[in-house]
Length: 403
Image (cartoon, rainbow, N blue to C red; front, side, top):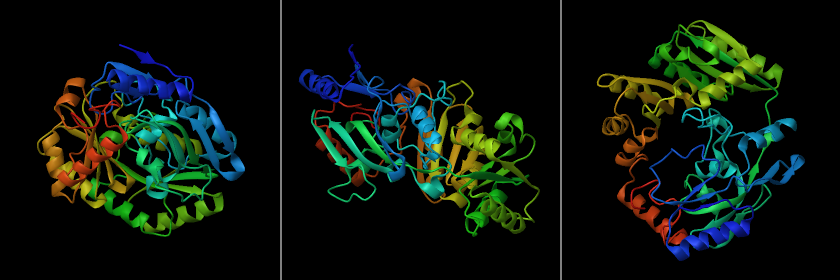
């Protein structure tokens, strides 16, 4: 068993070329914070990029940042914060949910898993902010896509193709992201006591208004007490985040309170407490219980999500909460992952997809972790893998068994 810890781009190329020559599949990791996501790797060797780190370009006035793939996301966020900027797609940290400490994710892992957070409704995900990449393909060849400027339209946008590829197509060595000013002020309106269906309607009203809501989530009563040190304990909490300049935030908050006056009691949470609240919603802290009880990440039609949860509860013990106005549902199962039931109900209620984010190694090996693709899409994915990694040496089986 060999572990490569390259310190230069040439050493990454050499490691991949060694794997090709030896016909030896390799697992690609940064710090390993997301190592237990996806199917168990079918490899004996590892390429770890944690020593290949550092910022290569940061121009705050140009809103552009480039860094090596092993660079810590937490360190980059600190650097950006010092300059009043941020990754607006708000990348989540899987560490606490997967039983690890927070702040261990790498920039390469961020792009490979296409991370984002509750601000997805407003700002998109990692793939919407990436400007360019340098990548070593499974052929052992170095190529680049995109560039270091916001306006770059030359060639195929392969930089976005690396997003959500889970290290199966190539190893990103350097990544350039667009960054944006951080919000000056943040306030969260908390509507208390709504049932799941009532919360879905309230969030839809808020998102459809002129309130410019940046994030909308709903924590049922049995989940609300697990964030911000139990401050919301006792009642279901529907959360609406407002960001921007203070006068604008205050005006929009007043307008939304009037619009939702009949929904129930509305409280305010501001600035640091609000930021902590949304960070904990983002990082699935309500289900970060140190166990390997199955946790699903379900993306579906927002107004159908509560129906899915209600139907699941008819046959299984499940905890749930809603992000993205209900378009993202986090489910924690008390027993078996109930994969067939979850996916059948998603299909019944308007379609979508489910990813088994946390489970034991044996369960992840036996259950399709990612949503099974329709035959035409699966064939396209297989051809794409063949083009970038014809020998199948990069993270084989991570997404689909045998691929």
